[in-house]
Image (cartoon, rainbow, N blue to C red; front, side, top):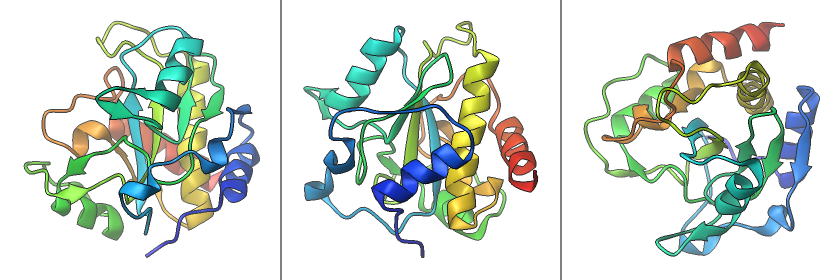
Length: 197
């Protein structure tokens, strides 16, 4: 049972990993907390945006759209490896997912298949949206992949979690495919290496 980091603590955790961080507007108070609680938090969820263009991607993730109001994550990781903070608190990123997956994340065990959507993930996960078309062909620059590793590791380090607390949206909610273009097992391994460094 971990309470979420404060906004300042979140920012510090990311900068401590050597990340370039941009604070977007009043991100510290931009959230969906009126729709439900934020926390306890148990892990980090990685997404792809299905967008191109950093400015457009950041704005969309901050503001959302008619069907899904923003923020759509806590941080947007653009192609150049910059982390743009767009929200702190409950964010519309995880949606409903599998309670068995949540239990496995909490226990830091291997993940079962996500075969139901019965648990509020927006309450329990930090979310990073990563700029990519999600078609399996749009490249993932090394600077961006490195930033994804560092961002996930920074949150895990702050909470005392291992790399097993990092999951992809596709591992949480049936029917989701993101992130597409790299494997989550590979990402968790790199996060573990970073945490040991």
